[in-house]
Amino acid sequence: MVQQITARQLDALLRSDVPAPQLLDVRESWEVGVCRLTGSTHIPMRQVPAALAALDAERPIVVICHHGIRSQQVALFLDQRGFRQVINLQGGIDAWAREVDADIATY
Image (tube, rainbow, N blue to C red; front, side, top):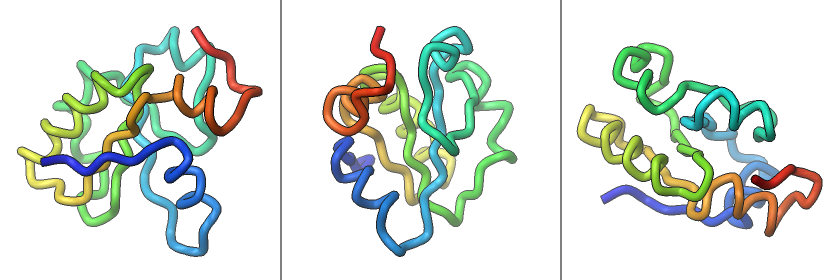
């Protein structure tokens, strides 16, 4: 089972002294053009299987999409491929915009 994190929990984690997790944005390019989290790596969902080498399996990965559905699917895929520190952002970038950073565009 993949761990879940809320937007507020992720915000607190990113502000803490612990090393930041990898932020993996699996939305489509046009979506990332609307808004994105600073420091995130963009790999569209359909390209993740071919891009596994770009991810650090030893580091926590927070997977992000629009509402948390596609990211949950990618998180499960990564977990099945041996990534053990995979976390899904509940509510996705939409929750981030509504709960953490009102300056981020919603769509």
